[in-house]
Picture (tube, rainbow, N blue to C red):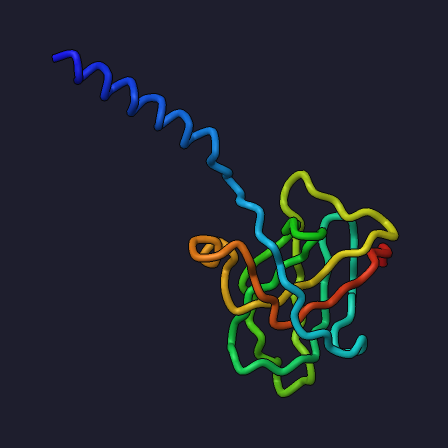
Length: 141
């Protein structure tokens, strides 16, 4: 009978220690992808709260995951269609920053375009490979 309270105590200690190591947003490392020529990705419009990109890269996929990164911290992200409207040479993506984040003037940021949602990748790996990686310095437009 004494073993039941001891086992319960060990389960409680193990459960509390597991909770202390849990990270709600595990740190991912976003590996730089292929750099494309400067003219292939342009910042059309930028404010402290959102950035619109004109992307002139042709992808085979109809949707890709776009991330706006500050180092390895995603500031904005989401799935966007990569189809070019009426045979134009580009598509546009507007990334709205998550609550509590703002872009800082003259600071460098990255646009990372990948095939998967980082949350799906983090179940298997702590690294995310960007297909396309574009660095830019924020200047409000």
